[in-house]
Image (tube, rainbow, N blue to C red; front, side, top):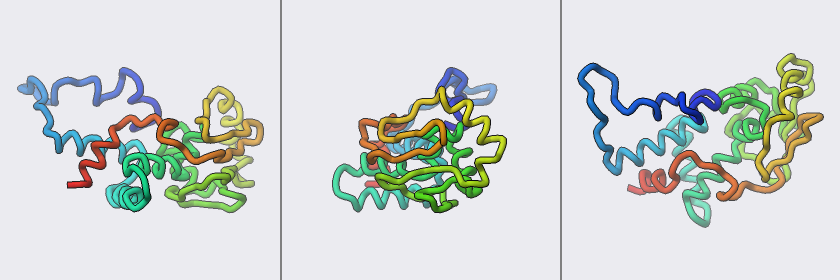
Length: 189
């Protein structure tokens, strides 16, 4: 969540400590329903690397679409360009993927794109810019990409490091590490 896969294992700081810091702290107090909703919203923001204003804009877009708001939000967040770069295995964390996009290393449909919040569509191709293929990072990535798995809604040419959005992600395809229902409840007050 914070830096790569650290919070997926037992070394996660949030999951490891049952007590708050300090010499007199015994146990943590039970969170209210509002606190649980806030924590889930914050977790989603941190996972995708968004500020509050950006996250709220994505929620409003999901609200305007037809269907279930929570599922729409999840699909919109997964379709962000920096998230696609992370899911394809071009980066080890969302922050690194955001940096790769921001520095202009990634191209969408043969056009250089440096906006991490760009929402990709079905059929879009994600590739590396010509100058970036000569970097040392690209060469080491070609070696290590063979061991990484790609979601079913994406396709990756491992030889040329070109990804394609085969279909839009379905809510069943997305492994959410947060409760979308709580986020919808938080914004629906």
